Length: 184
Image (cartoon, rainbow, N blue to C red; front, top):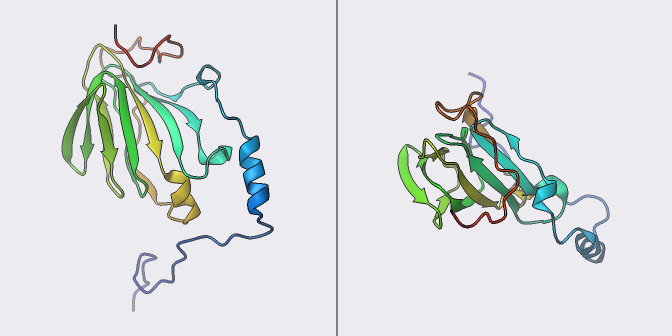
């Protein structure tokens, strides 16, 4: 008999982690209320690149929120993200630009003012459709809740590009702007 995969249906699964040690709702509320209520975007730098950049405002590791993860994505001209999938859902509010998503092989076009929803367990990738202008999206995920439930599956299918898109060699992420919500 062969070795069974760790994906077999007979495996015992734990869907919610045990809460170990002292846990006090009063102490947890005090901790949460002591956390910053405002984070200055100008103090948080973008990372990644050169086609897709991220500025993470709220992440599970910060301990600021129990339920959501919030970050800003900027796609350089002609840029694209990594191709990946994860258990948690995500909502992309498109701040500026135009582009599209490919979810499980199906293309969905978007432009500023739209919301793109990435459903659970969907292999997806984000694309800027413009060869000359960047695009931005504010991303909200329920990732911390899924981490708490020990539903951590996330897989990269294709990594983020390490070279700029053709024609966008001089693009630099927009670290500072007066108004992210309106075009020229």
